Image (cartoon, rainbow, N blue to C red):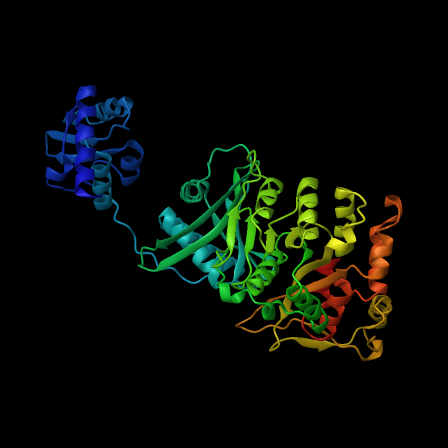
Length: 532
């Protein structure tokens, strides 16, 4: 604490002592001796009391303004063989004394690993480490390790007796530690302060942390997190989404697009007008896809504006506007109407959530802008059906819509450990049903020549997976799909739209997944786990 602030603290404490009619002591002027036989460290913390001076007849205690009168009475009675006196000291003085009585323990931060073999031992070690460290170090250490393991999310989950910490790595959650509730309250306090949220809120909250922490070891940890909280039966659960990717990662080459998918995306970039929707659940890579498109479109001759809740990555050259949907006058639709008056070439809307935003985005696409957004739907056809439900049958809709791209992320097999196998007859029959539904322009593989793969194991990679890849489907406004949009609303179904799109060349996520499983990029189990 700076000297001038400490002096103010002592002056304020002296005034409070005078008001309470108690003696005051400036701990900076005292000779600090330790009397460890008088009170235990635990008692000193709990009672906010320090023995300042002890001889065979006298004990002088230092108390703070937070010490209870009942504590004074109890100590006077407990040490009745001594003449006891009580002096108020500042909170800073109390902390200085406690550092002498309870010096900080040296903590060695071991790297967290995720393994199905030694999971119990690792969890025990990490839990013990977290119990020893100060709360801000705890947060920095957890985030540092999550980033090292390439985790996308950190989950803090309140259970009956303790709090579970899990990392989502390659789309799958792994337990890494358990915290006692007393320690979790300290962590939650630091987290809430950094993210500007409340620990007492009765509803869900969203916050953001962007700062640099320094661990006790001297290591610096950069935190860039979106924080989501929700009250549960046992306490406040927290999910932290990591945003430590660098701008150079947002390039189309990193999206793993097939040749056919690249042709579609490149056509959009070359003729930037219309509405493009990226569809998928949370954690399916929608934001990465959108940012990669924006980063590619980001040229000096274009004006690009984004509306985001919250802004997840800062992109030079792009006008990024944060939107807080819960605030009056701050909805996506309100902001989007204002943005369209600013003469942008490209607009990105974080998410289309309601009818008003959907109609405004459509109007923007019809007036010569390229509008990019995310949308929730189980598939591209399901998203198109839902959009029609929101805005009604609109003859201009088909001309405005450029692309609906649905995607899911699956774990990628480790090429060094994957193990080939041949499917049995029952599995062949199941696979043949999907192969027979392939679009006409996709060559059908010989079912008897198909090889599938299982994950292997190695000391370096016990799970047999390394990273993720996307399964995609791209629904375009082909002539057949356009004709379907002219039918009566009760005649337009998700199934019929998908069948027509496949007939005219669309590869579904399931079909895409099977082709990637046949190529040894992922497993059949991963495809069915994610796509269904």
